[in-house]
Length: 230
Ligand SMILES: Nc1ncnc2c1ncn2[C@@H]1O[C@H](COP(=O)(O)OP(=O)(O)OP(=O)(O)O)[C@@H](O)[C@H]1O
Image (cartoon, rainbow, N blue to C red; front, top):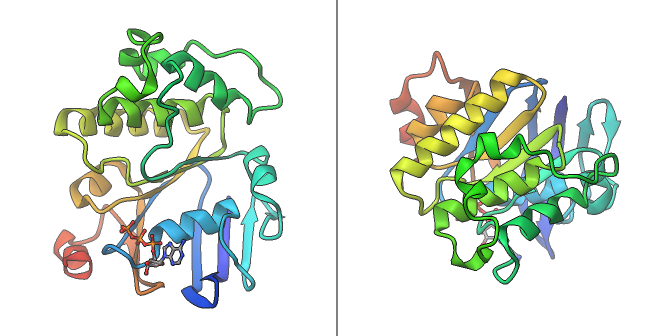
């Protein structure tokens, strides 16, 4: 459903991604791993149209999106949870969730089933986004992306700086979504155990290039570790 090929990405004149090719099948959870600064976030931003990508192709369900403005890519069904989550600190949890609906032209009411995935949010609807813990903010950011019912969800380091019990909650949500089968996910992550738990397939990036890929079921974790250890 996502087919990226020969993609280069630049910040100004500096080339950050070189000739990246990556494919995700419908309903798959794919993780992109790599050390700090190798270009993982830049790759997600390239899919969202937030960086310069003069060469290559990004096909979403058979449609070329590489020249589309970012807003249209969201309308095509891509949800993005950036690193740092981008929660509006002065808006309530409920208002933050409502903002997610702006991306969905077919739906203007909040589907209550979002609280089945994130029960903690239901207990905090009136609380300000900025008063939530880091883990709760991460859950809110994922929930906000999901209310627009994306067909492809991009998550940038969802476990970063989060306590283990909430990491487990997030892993559960990802597995639940996967079992429903109507969403495809690309997750940038450095936490290998989490990747092996939730992903079907992985790619490892180094210095702007893909250097390893495979099925998470059959890989020897030490082989990945060797490529991502600092
Ligand atoms: N706005 C920017 N302008 C110029 N260079 C940038 C910009 N953002 C990132 N870079 C550079 O691009 C390279 C890739 O950064 P990127 O954030 O994509 O890496 P990453 O693999 O996601 O790292 P991390 O895990 O630390 O988030 C780095 O060398 C970084 O310094």
